[in-house]
Image 1 (cartoon, helix red, strand yellow):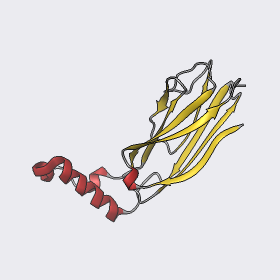
Image 2 (cartoon, one colour; image 1 turned 135 degrees about the horizontal axis):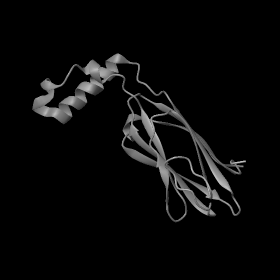
Image 3 (tube, helix red, strand yellow; image 1 turned 90 degrees about the horizontal axis):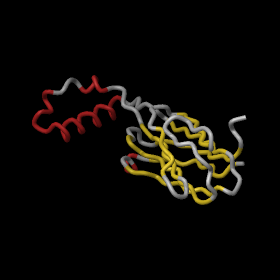
Image 4 (spheres, helix red, strand yellow; image 1 turned 90 degrees about the vertical axis):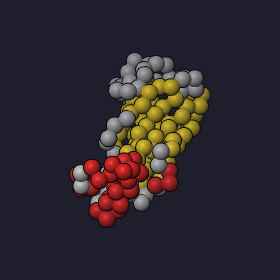
Length: 152
């Protein structure tokens, strides 16, 4: 059963924020499956990449910016969005991975790496997207959360 399915876009102004997506879990759910994808992963516009890299070197290094290697040494620039999950009472873990497509399962007896196994409590849960780095002009995202028995 699909508990939440959402397609949306995020933009550079959303960088370094968290997007909380609440969803309800009913009684008797055995496991949850989270499927998340986003695109594009890599910034292919070299002009934009150079601008972003040089701007950040200047901001972070200040007077030492000239000691950094060529901007091209920092390529490719990649978008990074990760997923965290909270149950009604506690943090259930996160998937801080580089993949632009991911699937995670949480159940009483199993959890994907980074998440905590345990009873699937009824109530309001939160899927939290951590928008670490947005280097393209737009990122298209798709999140689907399903309830079922995904371990058989």
